[in-house]
Structure formats: structure tokens, C-alpha cells
Length: 536
View 1 (cartoon, one colour):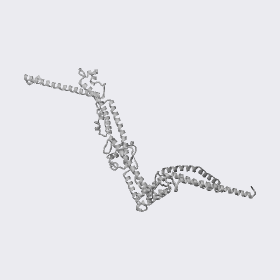
View 2: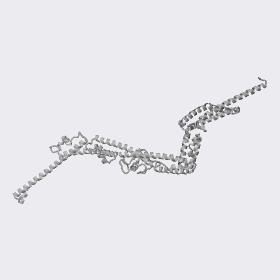
View 3: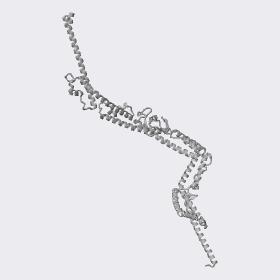
View 4: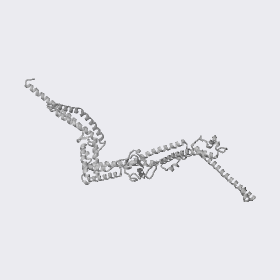
């Protein structure tokens, strides 16, 4: 520079001024450089401090109690003395040591947080499904507060706790889903049986859930019955969605309550309709029988109805109306048929004249315009009464029939015994065996049956005798003595038993007298014959 100045001819003052400017500029450059480097040192220390804070947070969240500060560890390493400029470990090496370890721990933390987030998501989703709310609402629920923080504690124990809770909630979801699917199947079956087209407000109340009920299941192994209704066990179906939507009812608590209420309502409707159809069926069956409806018509109607739908009820009501109209046209014929049955039942029940006369007010109505439905009902009720009476009498009538058969055999045996030639010839042995069987029945069965009958007949009288103090139609205390007794062929059978036994005793005495008379005549004839031949 001096050489250049000499050549140029720069004055000493100028030279001094330029040197001063040059020194000042150099000083400024040095100062700027120092400031820049100081900024680098501060930045290093700041980043190292921040990295150390993050490292500490990660260690705390992972609870790495034995984790040593990477810088301290490096400083204790003898080989680290050669890493700096002779005054210890440089900031560059501190930063690299801290960031190296931090990157490793960040990977561990991210994996742990991902695990926690997965479990948290499972918990929120299951809780939301069970409560019937959104996942966002579930995350704010009081019961979910312990599962909000997934950063401060990332230990294996905490992660296992989250996973365990997630599995617990999912088990609850599975159990709830199974219960919901079972209820849905029951509801769908009932809706199908009742032939409800959702939504419906006929008979079973309007239910907006019916459309959701019908669309909430998807089959795993679907089976369909002859009517197109879904059938199967709950494990053959699954819920379309755990959350409620316009086409799915979900598995929330409110869904469980609504389905429970709905199945109770539907089952009640099924019972009501079954009762109605039962009553209709009985009425239709009685009218079919009464009106002699051909089997072809009955079968055609039976095959036209099915299930518990309103269509079935309407058809049943229409059939009853049709039969009632037909009944009105045929009422005269029906009344006469009932009267014929009444006369037959009078004979079978051995009804007395007084008992028959008690129905004269209806029995002797003959004008067609007077033969109303009420008159037919009276006849039907009277027939039912006589049938009931005959049903009660039948056991006694059966015993009477057995006794009368033995009585007839006893009379036949008596007549046979009068024939001395009956035991002669080829069939004598069979005839003798036949007579012995009759004698055994007369000797053993007749007293036993008579004893049972007398006991039953007295019991009948005790149950049917007129109350004490009852007057006749004229108001006099002069009742028919036969009232209350079991009548047979126009008279109390107790009297018939007594009369038969008295008659039999009389016949026996007469028979014995006749035998004695014949024996005496034979003795007289024998004596006369002996005398004629000189015998004494």
C-alpha cells in the first residue's frame, strides 16, 4: 500500500486518513462477526435447552427413570475431551448428542402415542355407540375424562390400561349388539306376522322406529320362511351400524329401551289379534256347522287367510257377516232342526212332561215372521242345556243300560230253564256254558251294578231335588213327587229298580209254586200208576 501510495504521490495526511478509515472499517467488521458468532452460540444454547426440555418431558411421559442426560454422559466420556478446542465439549457436540438421543426417544414416544390414540379411539367409539351419541360428545363426557390425556403418561402400564378398557367397552358393545339383534329379530318377526307396513298407525300405534327396525340388520347367513319373513338365530345377523341413522336404529341405550317397549307393544297386539281370531274362528266354525256349509267352501276360506294381519281380521269379520246374513235366510229351517234335536234330547234325557212344557213358549212358535234370531238363540241355548244334562246323565245311563241288559238276560234264562229239552242234542255243552255265564252275571254283576246305581241315583236326587218350601205353578205346596229324581222311560229309575226286584221276587215265588204243584202232580200220578200195577 505504501509502494502504491509512493507511486501515486499520496500525501502523508491523506495516507493517515485512509489508514484511519481502514482500521475503523476493520474494527466494525470484527465487531459484526463477533455478534454473529455470539448469536450462533445463543441459538445453540437455546436449541440445546429446548431439546433438553423436550427430552425431559419425553423421559417423564415414558417414565425413563434411569435415562441420563446425553450431554452429561458425553462429558463423562474421556474421549470427548478431544472433541472441542481443548476447553471441553463444544456446543456443536452437545447439540448433536442431545438431538441424537431425542430423535431416538421421539420415535419411541410417537409409537406409544399411536398405540394410545388407537385405544382412545376404540374407547370413544364404543362409549359413543353404547350411549347413542357422537364420538365428539363422547370425548367430552365425564366418564371419558380419564382417557383424554394421551401425552403425559405413555408408560407400558398406561398403554395396557387403555387397551384393557377398550376391550372391556368392546365386549359391552358385543353384548349390547347381541341383545339388540335379538330384539330386532323379534320385532321384525312380529311386524311380519302382523303384516305392518312401517310406519303404521293402525291398531298398534304409530312407530317411527319400524322403518329403522326393518333396515337395521344384515344377514350373515340369511334364512327366509314361506311368507318372506326373516328367520334365524341372533348370531346369523349383525347390526348394519352401531350408530343410529335414518335407516338403522343403532345400539344406543335409547334404542334398547325403545326396542324393548316396541316388542312388548307388538306382542300385546299379537295376543289381542290371536284372541280376536280365536273368537272369530269359534263363531265361524259354529255357523259353518249350523248352516251346513260345504267342506269345499270352508277349505277355500281357510286357505285364503294366514297370519295375524289386518287382512285376516277383515276376512274373518266379512265371513261372519256373510254367515249371519245366510243364517237370517235359513233361520226357519235352523229352528226346526233345533226342535228335532230337542225332541231327540228329551227322549235321551227322559225328560218329563213338565220339563218339556217349560219350553213351550218357544217350541210352539210356528209363524215364519216370529222365528227370529232371538228364538233361534233360545233353541240353541236350550239344546246346549239338554246336551249338558245328557253329558251328566250319560254315566248313569251307561250303568242303566248294563243293568237292563242283565235283567233281560235273567228273564231269558228263566224262560230257557223251563225248556227241559234245551240241554239235549249236539249243542248242549255250549248252551250250558252260555247259561252259566248268564247266571254268574246275574248273581255277581247285577247286585254290584244295582248298588252303584242306587248310590248315584240318590246323589242325583240330592243335587237336583227342589229346594224346601218350593211351590207349584198354582202357588200350592203340592209338587210332583218325581221332581229331582233320575227319570227313565217316564218314571224315576229308583222306583223302576224296586218294581223290577219286586216283580222278580213275585215271578220266583210263582215259579216255585208252579214247580211244587207239578211235583205234587207227578207224585200223585206216580202213586196212581203204582197202585194200578199192585205196588204199594
